[in-house]
Length: 322
Image 1 (cartoon, rainbow, N blue to C red):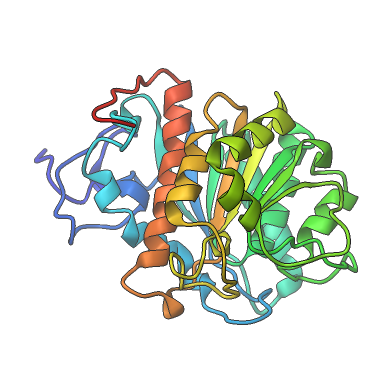
Image 2 (cartoon, rainbow, N blue to C red):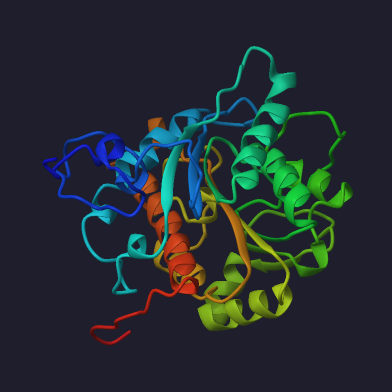
């Protein structure tokens, strides 16, 4: 078979990487093979295209498609700054999107939870592309059912722990619900990048964006790593954790946030922790410009995969001053 192009549906195994026209071909995340066969798969990338829980600007139901499109250049070369091809050791598939019925919102939590539970039952770790941030709640329900309560590392402009009635679908309250249900191990959890106020920290360690700007990446990584310890760590990355200069395409932008380089350095500093899953959410393409936001989201997710590849045996090959 001519190994050139459309590897998303022509590849025969989960570690192949072919030549593609960057601007053409079938789109999948990082050009990974579309498959629901999880035999031997380390990570299943899946889209959660739901945005009926937003409180301001909509559009992030289109986020998974945009992040996949923005990932094409990251699939061309060895990963920077790691210096390896993560897919030589890490088997990753694009699992496609979770099918939900937005006209019956009462079914959304169950649909997402079952979708992620299926990935976990197949032996793979979930990497979810949102969708608004509420989708992290049913994902966490599935992950906690599999692993037990998890440490949460939340990148965000907002705490998402405002008063919750236990019933509503609201992307600003679901982590209060997760804490109250015991699916998040709050004593090992950290929120980073915050620049909105809540009267209660709900037990989270909070590293505000100004604190990170003043104290630096190293200090932030030290706090996160000490806080997590050996607990299973789930990362929920709301793209509005970045400053609007680096992520204009999102629903609730707040000034003063993390720069894209800061977020990437923070992710890259988490190697060796017990990483069990991740979501990247709140990318709203209608408000994006030149794919800035989608590129940031794709790169964050890519670098998380590189940490998993490193844990599985990929060796960094540094070039230049890092």
